[in-house]
Amino acid sequence: MRFRITPQNASFFEHFADLAGHVLDGANAMRDILGLPQDERSAAAERIKEIEHRGDDATHKIMNEANTSFITPFDRDDIYALASRLDDCLDHLEAAIDIVVLYGIDELPHGVDDQVDILVRMAELTAEAMPRLKSMRDLQDYWIEINRLENAADQRYRQMTAALFREEQDAVQIIKLKAVIDEMEAAADAFETAANTVESIAVKES
Amino acid sequence: MRFRITPQNASFFEHFADLAGHVLDGANAMRDILGLPQDERSAAAERIKEIEHRGDDATHKIMNEANTSFITPFDRDDIYALASRLDDCLDHLEAAIDIVVLYGIDELPHGVDDQVDILVRMAELTAEAMPRLKSMRDLQDYWIEINRLENAADQRYRQMTAALFREEQDAVQIIKLKAVIDEMEAAADAFETAANTVESIAVKES
Amino acid sequence: MRFRITPQNASFFEHFADLAGHVLDGANAMRDILGLPQDERSAAAERIKEIEHRGDDATHKIMNEANTSFITPFDRDDIYALASRLDDCLDHLEAAIDIVVLYGIDELPHGVDDQVDILVRMAELTAEAMPRLKSMRDLQDYWIEINRLENAADQRYRQMTAALFREEQDAVQIIKLKAVIDEMEAAADAFETAANTVESIAVKES
Image (cartoon, rainbow over all chains, first blue to last red; front, side, top):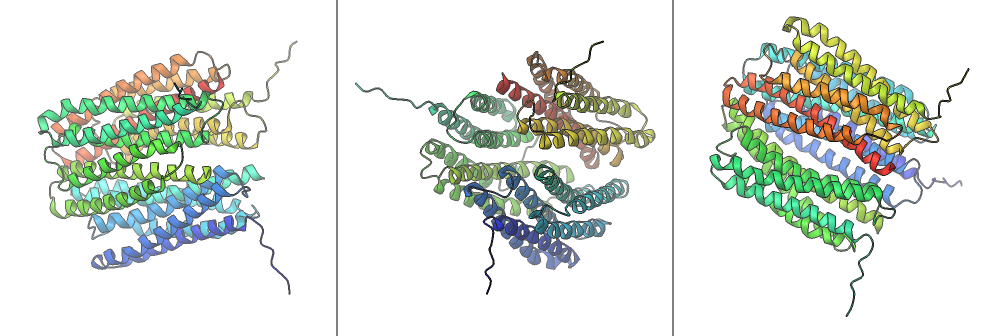
């Protein structure tokens, strides 16, 4: 029989993988909820709230452990930064759903499906990258691809915003749809910021 | 006769208590100003501006002292963070009043009184907690209660936002009232962030 | 023949001067683009995007160098902070132009010229101050003047916002013009935050 020796700080990497897993759950929940008819979205939105709470707990755990551990696998400030950035991603995903429900939005902005697809893909890549933090290897593909996706999201955002102001006459409708589009764009930016944080950690540790 | 021995860094705690006192003054001034008839609010709003300037000065003093002191009572970065977070609370309170005055808002959003009551209570708890930073004792009740109040504020915010989009037809009115409601919610979030900062300092120092 | 001895960390100061140069280019490009007829703005806006990319590269270079240098001319965190704050200035300038183009804004808000003049002046002062980081001398005039300009920008912002809500009836027009005015104000705030960062570095290093 062999014992598995768990290194002292394995838990940090596990917590980051956990947190990124919640972010991915959040992205998938967002896609599901937006696919529902309007009158079913409000109840379904509870799910993404629960996921967000789990994300908060995971973030909290990382912060507390960083505060109380004598040794951390990388710089304490970088641990805070990365946990906060991942948490931001989930916050923006949840906020987008929140706007759809709270503002009573029926017809979603044209093109939002593309934004959602990009965000789900960003969440997948982020969740896949976290286990590689331990070795600090093969992370470059992750941040390069996230940056590419963020550019794609940005272009889509620009087209949608221009179309909204060109085609929609109703000011209340503009307020509602603009809020959704903007929040999705903020989510894409948050994934890029998280990837940049990973890049800067990798540069330091290399 | 006994001399009171003032420890070298007593001033940090005094400055934090000062700053939180300005935040509480700001919350009370906000409540007073919103209670006035519209044509008297603009002049009265000068008061909250003055309070905000005093808050900026107190923040500045803390930052400068942290920068120039050889020894600080807790981590320098945490001193910056807490001072910034308290200053943020006051900024949001002042911004809410600013919106009411600048946008020429006459009738306030229904339910704003509840938001204001919660914010004043949050400011009181924050001001009461600051003197306990010195001993780092009995702070847990503070951050737990602030988190509870933030949840209450959030629920009220959600009800008000949903009601606004359901009941108000006039887009300009939606723009105006939404800005007030959003800023109050941002203020509640800022108090929670400040309490979380205190919690993380307490965890580290314990 | 004399050789110029470049101190090991000269490059940090050069990078900061570079970055601030891009910010100034951005402010000048913004002024030029806003002076064009609406149908020429979209093509011209590519220029400010290019400038922003150059700014991102310069920021990146500073960050990487701070991460990999054994010795830095001042505190590593302050290097990150100052680079980020300068980058924020450029982001807001670019965002203002972006809003004008994307929202299809024809007639600019009355008074925007004053906002632009102040921003260009802030960018000039910032670019002029960066070379003085090396000696940490004669920087006080810079941050005092920036603070004065930010107050002027703030007053103009307040007049413009109040006038917009008083005089404009069309909600879509309010949404559009408010977005421009707000972004310009955010740019002015960003210059002030950058100047405050320089002040806090100077206080520490003195």
